[in-house]
Image (cartoon, rainbow, N blue to C red; front, side, top):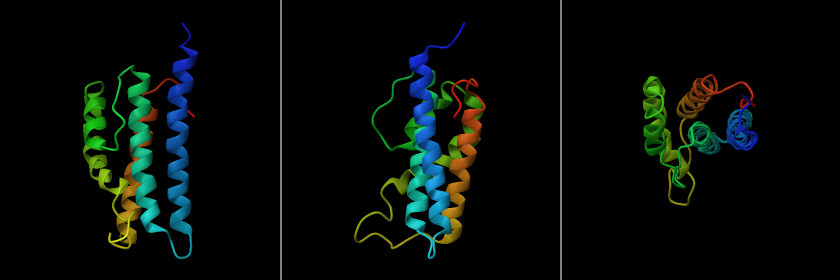
Length: 137
């Protein structure tokens, strides 16, 4: 039986937005000088949207939140095997606001930014393989 086209479209839209955040983070890393504060922000955003795609596909409502622990725990209720990557992604939550406002530290170290992007990419990969092919971007 084919999947509900509206559910496919909504889930895919979350994934496409996550992909754009991953691409933006990678691009910001190559700028001269690199925009490291934006790299970690986009990594957090990609992780958040990836979790929301998974929850959307499984019909699980979620609050409007940037809290990756909350979203990750909801995902673990569906797929406990995601625990290792969820645990790695949770610390990205702080990047939704850290380095974004006056008075904050100027920028993370390059290795911190690269690590955040690597975690967000891995999370995206682990979620996407658990979704049907017609949902994947």
